[in-house]
Structure formats: C-alpha cells, structure tokens
Length: 337
Image (cartoon, rainbow, N blue to C red; front, side, top):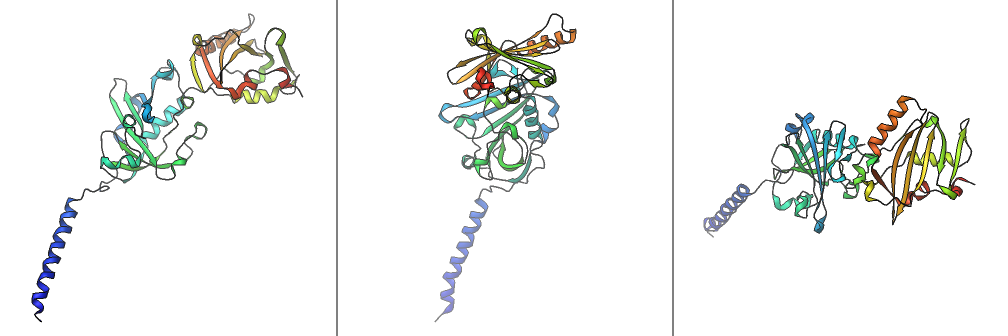
C-alpha cells in the first residue's frame, strides 16, 4: 500500500484544521483581556472634594426608573425629591467615599450583549443596574458608575441602613461611558427606600433633664412626672427607649397633611424647653409634625435652641408606619400594668 497517498489527505485535513483554529482565535473577541486599574474611578477620587451632587437611579422594570438627587449645601446634603429636606449626610458621604475607593479585581466582558446577565444594563432600558452619578458645582460629570449583581448570592445584595458598610463585597460594575465591565470590591448601598436617604434625626434634648410627659388633650389627656429618676407611671421608661429609636420613613410638607384631628404629646424639660409632637393616623401610616417652645423665663440659650429646632423641623410632616401607633398615639392603659 502506498502510505504517501494515504497521508496526503490527512495532512491536508490537519492543515485546514489549523487554519480554521487560527482564524477563530484571531477573530475571537476577548471578554476579560483588559488589565484592571488599581482604583476604578481614579480621576474622580482625585477630585472627591469637588462633589456637589449625587444622583442615584434604580430601575423599576416597566414602571421606568426611580431617581434620587442629592445636593450639597452649606448646612449639609438635601433631597430634591423631598423639597430639599435634609438628607442622611452619613450615608451620602460614605457613598461618595465608597465610589472613590472602589477596586477593580478582574476584567469581565466588554460585549454589550452580555451586560444584562451581569445586571449592568442601564435602569432606563429595563435594566437592573443602580447608577451612581456625581457632578461638581458647575454641573460637570465627575463619575457615572453602574452597579450590577453581586458575585455571591443576589439575596445577600440588599443592604439595610443600620448595617451599611460593615463589610466589603464583590460585585460587577462598569463605567457608563465604557462597555468594559469589572468584578470589583467595595461598599455601595443598594437600598432604594427613601427612608435610607432622609435625615433620620428627630428633635432631641438632654434626656436627663426630661421631667414630664403629657399625652392627649381634653378628656383623654393624661401625664406623668419623673421625681428622683423614677416615673410616676411604670411604662414611661420603656416608651422613652422606643421613642429614642424612632426613625421616619418619609417626609412631606406639613400643609399637605390634615392635622385637624391630631393627638399631641409633649416632652417637658426642667430648663424650660418643651417639644410637642402632633400625630394623626391616615390609612396605613401616621403623620407627625413637631414644634419646640421655650418658657418665658427660660435662659437665652434655651430660647435660641427652640428657635433652631423650629427652623429645622417646623413646617415638615414626618411619616411613620402604622406599627408605630402604640408609640405615637398611646392610650393611658399602655403605660399601666
């Protein structure tokens, strides 16, 4: 048998296979050939102190996109979507720092067809990405980042405000002006609730100076006093502890809420300051408005404090869930037994 005649077609087949493999190799679009930068947004990080606005956008599927715009003012950050109500400065500042400190670990796909599987499609295109956009005082964009899925279980992605930033996580990101995606490590909040972004603080004064609690009005009015550190009704201390932990869910202009049937309670302090909360139930929520007063014989600094608290809180109505009814609309029996 002529072996040469048998080997010739095998050689041709092998050569053809090599040509096809080489063609495929040269024609393949690499998905992770880019070298990761040490800091993903180094240009933004170098100008972090110039950040004047932070825009956070979440996708809502067929309902479109939900946008939150925060602005820096002389007194802190405010929320455009809530009539410039003060924002949660701590969360805003931590978000800005987290963007500056974001580390790219590995390159992922640069092919737009694969972005949806990583959660990196823009919110306006039925995408699941969360967009963080930062601009300076002149409106010039400093950074625009899309936050996608976590590398680990997506069920772990939801972050509550109370445990924001305790650990580094790994997730997929890309700059909005680039198709290149990255596996990154850092801390970025995913919480879409407005409660996470509004200022959680309520009017407060020195708790050691609190001497009286007054609830209700007219025939339903009742009160309790503290003498020698002991309250005249046993449930007062428990109520105060729960009240100190109170945080609003949302905010509105006070004139938009009907407070005609509101029930008040007042915290009275020994230095002449009093804080009155008027609370009204509306469907499944409770709205509350606040006012500070200083007694006529109070020291000047207490009168200044009352004026400062009113400048900050008067005119606003804070929303709480109906679960807070025993706290904001208590009856006398709630303090007995």
